[in-house]
Image (cartoon, rainbow, N blue to C red):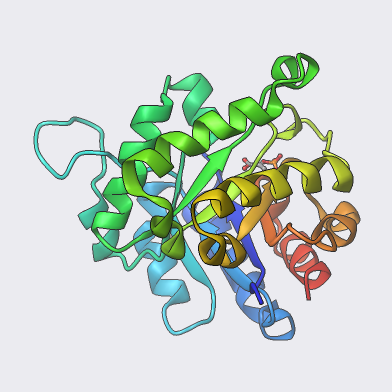
Length: 250
Ligand code: PEP
């Protein structure tokens, strides 16, 4: 049985003050949704604050990115070992905004995935097609290519300690959600690709859906057989809405 994970990607939003309030709200409402694992992903600079506020609670935290490098002259980058200093459980790699706005290739994403594992932090690997790719009918081949880059570098067993997030690019921040059936199809495809290499790992791996998920559509999405939680952007910036999504997964 896969425990659902509801993860909040705060992107480049928040301030010390707003984050204190958001975390307070999440902590206060976490107990009734304890069946679901919660995690939040602040901007790097708020990691200390988040660790301080969440230590000793059931809510996990991590970052939205990391460097593929270990240390050295890489201005502006943050290494996995530094995330360990703040006891991050997870790190998001290959978010579509990183791929499209910052040119992250499948190969670089795979190396970031490896860098996270090397320091014992669970990567959340994001995959997903653009609207153009969906319209061209190449969704599966795009997702397969993104997944294969990681599988070839790290092996399927790496997913014993990793999570996948299927995030159709056309659904991120657009208010347009994949239907539960559309999402389920791709989730089942991803699981089948893992199963080709190792069926035990495939059965265990959590595959989250991301893309304009909110309380109003979460029940239907989270009821699908292969949807094991959500990676939530906009709706994770409000404690009530974030917790309502988690409730939908209980
Ligand atoms: C995301 O950024 O991962 C995301 C899913 O964003 P939103 O929920 O705002 O579409």
